[in-house]
Every structure is written in structure tokens, then in C-alpha cells.
Image (cartoon, rainbow, N blue to C red; front, side, top):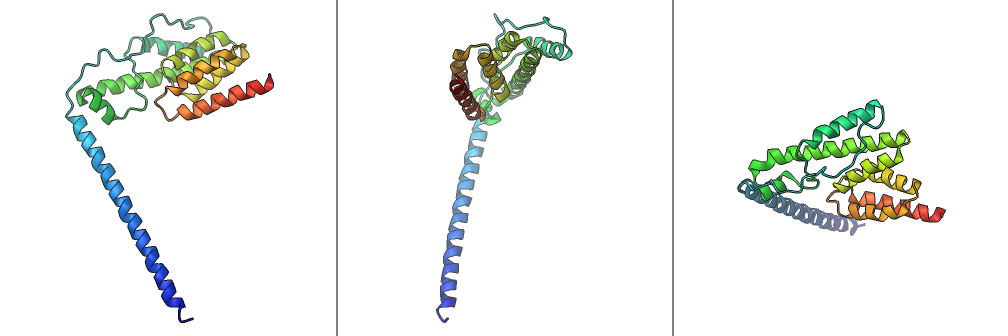
Length: 210
């Protein structure tokens, strides 16, 4: 009985020492991370304006999309939105923070780059909706043309990849799924791994049914 209290106190002191050490270590890590962030931010804000005229803008040249083929309100809305965006500058900046953009191109370009990135987000979302509606209306070839264009410009919408892969299988073109995986593997997005996992499962399921 006499040994109980000193033993408990000993373990309590050890526990407190470990907790204190971990807290101080976490504080140091947080301080270093915050210092690193502000160093990058200060450098970014001091970056001179760069030429952004030759960036990899979305190019509709030679792209064939199914405009004005079918009478449907949602299709018409999607087509009108895409036609409006064709006249705007569109940049895929997925995965890049404002600090990244300022470091690369200067803070003076940030408002323009942000707008171009917003145009990209609107475009791939519209293409996803357009492709899904075409599929719902039993126009698989037209849906494929819309969704494959979206993938080609770097969409990271999982539903776009999933429907496109399903349509390839439906149309007897499973050989077109590996290139989809190649596109997904190049994404600078948190959605890359979920998309690749989904495509792998689809390929496996298709192989099992053959």
C-alpha cells in the first residue's frame, strides 16, 4: 500500500513530461510552418509581374461538340454557357494556391488568373452536366464527345470520368479506358486517387464479366 502513491505520482510525472514534450514539439512545428508560409507569402507579394499571354489556355480549335442537335432545355442551357465561355480566357489552375500563383506570375496577375480559373471550373462543370444529359437522352456518342473533351482539358470531376468509362464499356470500347487512367494520373488534384481507384474497379469488374 505504501508504494502505491509514489508509483502513481511517478507515472503522473512521466505522463505530464511526455505531454509537455509533445506540446512543445507541436508548437515548434506550427511555428516553423507559419514562418515558412509567411516567408513564401512575402516573396510572392514581391514577385514582379510576369507575361501570362503564353500559358496553356483551353483551346477550342478543332474541337467538335454537339451543338444544336437536340431540342432540350437543359442541353440548350449547357450549350449556351459553353459558347459564352469559348470567347473567354480559360486556365486550369487546379491544385495551385494564390501564393503559388503570385510566386510564379506576380500578385498583379492574380485577379486575372483567378477569373480564368473560375472560367475553367464553370466550363468543366457545364460539360459534365451536358454529357450526363446527353446520356440520359440516349445520345451516347455525343455524350462521349463532350465528356472526353472535358477530360482532355484536365477536368477532375469524378462523375465525368465514371460516366465516360461506362459509356466506353457500353459502346464496346474498353480499350479507351487506359488512356482515361493516363489522364487521371496527370491531375494535380485531390481527386486523382479516387478517380484512379474508381477506374481500376471498373476495369476489374468488366474483366470478371467477360
